[in-house]
Image (tube, rainbow over all chains, first blue to last red; front, side):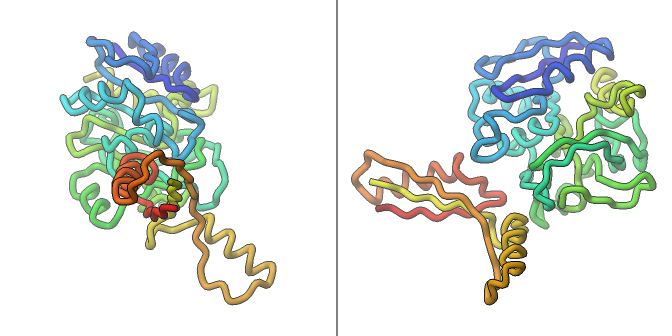
Length: 224
Length: 79
C-alpha cells in the first residue's frame, strides 16, 4: 500500500499524515507540488492540510494551478483514490474534483477543537470500517470550513449518498460549528473515489492524544 | 489600461463578514443601513489597449481564478 502525500508551499500537515499512514503499515512518499507526475505505484493520493499559498485570494485557489494538480486530476479521473483533508478539501473543491466550496466560518473565528461527527454513509472505501450513525471524535482546525452548495447540489449529494460526515453532538444531534450547509463535514464525488473533509483524522490516531477514531477511517483505504 | 475587479459573495450566500460589520454599524448607531456586503477588490494593470479584448481577457481571469463562481460574483470596470 503506497500513500502519496502532496506538499504545497504552506502545507503543514504532510508529516502528521505520513506518520498516521505509516502507523497503519503503509509506505508513504511526500511529493512537492512542482512535480508533473505522481509515483506510478500510488494507491492513495492525499492532499494534506495547511495553508497552501498562505490562503491568498481564497483557500486552495492558487494551489489548484500547481503543476502536480494536472496529474492529480488525471489520476482521479482514472478512478484513483484521492483524499483531501482540511486545506486539501478546499483545494479539491477549487479544482472541481469535488462539488461546492468552503467559505469563511460563520462566527468568523478560526476554530481549533475536537468535534464529534456522525457517519452518514459508509458505502464507500473511506468509511466502510464504520457503520452509518456511528459517532467519531475528530479534531477540527480551520477558518474556512463553512461548506456551501446550492439546493440542487445538496439534493444531488443526498440522492447519491455523497454526504460522508456531519457535525453533531455526542448523541448525533446536529451541532454546527461553522455554518456549513446541512452541517456537512465531509463529502465524496459521485464515483466515490475522491473524498474531502474538514476534520483531521490523521490527528486522531492515538487515544493518549485525545482520540484514536481516525484509525478506523484511514484504515478503510488500506483494506481496499 | 486598468481593470478593477470587485468580487463578492453571491446574493443568497450568507456573508458573515457583512453581517458582523452591519452589527457593528448598528452598535455605533448608524441608522438606515439595510444590508452590508463585504467583498474584495483586485486592481490589474493591463498592457492591452482595446477595451473589448481587455474585458474578454479579464472575464476569463475571473472565471478561472479571481472568483469562485460557486459562491462569488464579480464585476469588472475598465479605466
